[in-house]
Amino acid sequence: MNTVETDIQQAVEDAAAHLYVWALKDIPQDLRDALAAAAETETSVPGQRVLQTILKNVQVAERENNLVCQDTGIAVYYCRVGEHFPLHPARIYRALYEGTMRATVDHPLRSNIVHTLTRENTGPNVGYRVPIVHWDFIADWDGLDVKCVPKGSGSENMSFLKMCVPADGVKGIKTFVLESIVGAGGKPCPPGIVGVGIGGSADYAMHLAKEAIARPVGTRNPDPLVAQLEDELKDLLNETGIGPMGLGGDVTVLQCHIEHADTHMTLNPVAVNYQCWAARRASAHIGADGSVDFDREA
Amino acid sequence: MAEHRLTFPASEEDIRKLRAGDLVTVDGHIIGIRDRTQIRIFDQGVTPPMDLNGAFLLHTAPGVRKRDDGGYDPVCIGTTTSARMVRFTEPLGREYGVRAICGKGGLPDDAIEPMRQYGMVYFAIVGGAAALETTQIEEIEEVAWEELMPECLWKFRVKDFGPLWVGIDSHGNSMFHDVNEAAKERLETILAGL
Image (cartoon, rainbow over all chains, first blue to last red; front, side, top):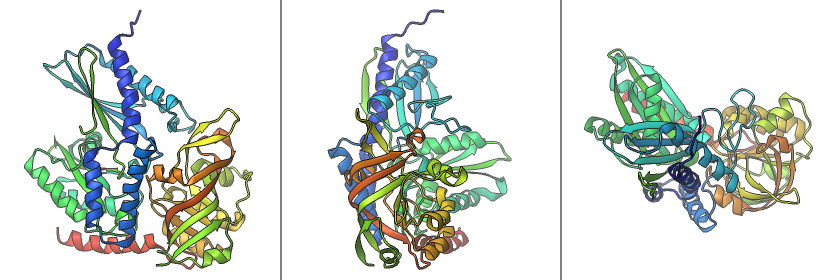
């Protein structure tokens, strides 16, 4: 079978290559604002010094055109594909794969991906089933939205799942989130974003938790019940005193984001996925004509 | 809380002066090390081709650019989570005379006793602040075990490296132990109020 590489595939590849590096260098304004607000409220001496160092680091990255953090992460992409977008998802995946690889070689970026058993490097931030791509399909639309989330391992290692039972109720959810974050201590580079996925199935709850960390910082779930839980958990988490980098202080988390799905009557899954303070993400909106509109805030 | 400036390699006497919570800035030479490097040293029994006596070890896997002459220039050098590597603390002190281990997020309490016994400290750095950290690295002077890239043994010359907190001192104190214990107590109160 012959395959034809179209211009639009090239446009998606170019966008991915740009997004990966851009996300690593230029953190979104909502995150910058959240970090600045944290520095205004933090009262502990080490916590204050940590936050000032973080703010300085963001400026140095900008001045030196360097990466904010050395961990170039595992490349995760979220795609929203319109039903009339003129490139099949199989080709979109190929473009994201090639773009990730090209960005890694050209910059150069640190290459993190290894075979999970042999631990041998598998290529320039690509490998079997890497990058990781999540798909949503949108009816009556011809565009493509791509969000790149290079996920650092320090925070990804702080991921937790509990299959609470219905009798544990909302209290069980809160308890598990609080225990997870106290247990994580300084390891995931606090203060960051606590992503929580509730409902669905075991795998889907963790997927939702990851989706939650990739939202613009401080946005609220459209369901008012869930939004209320986000506010409540954020405040409770900041009462733990873990503080910036786990050195003690008032600001343990910048935000708590929750995504939910309906679930089976006997299930009550809770997943926690942490995102470090360097919560990197960058998006592009790609038109059916191959036009690309980059968006740091989506 | 005192502030110190230290040059590495350092002596046991220098290290014993430091107390948990002190703030430290470092000059001199530091050695980059990570999971695979230490698995090779201790689990595979391979002697490292660099002198670790008095050394400052940094938990890192740097982003670098290879030069035509075979050397490396820094691209982005930052620090990884230390807790994964806690089991190497004791042999690093006993067998190699390492004086400081630096990383982010703290070392669990298992590190407290070997650090007291062998005269070592744990320095806590601000994780993720790699753009700043890279400006404090003057040169990559030496690289060994390049086949483990990026988890090689790296020798960096640094100036004004920090800020670093003495997270664990050589007298049995740990900031992380204290913060975590206090957090567990607060958690009990929070959970009781749910």
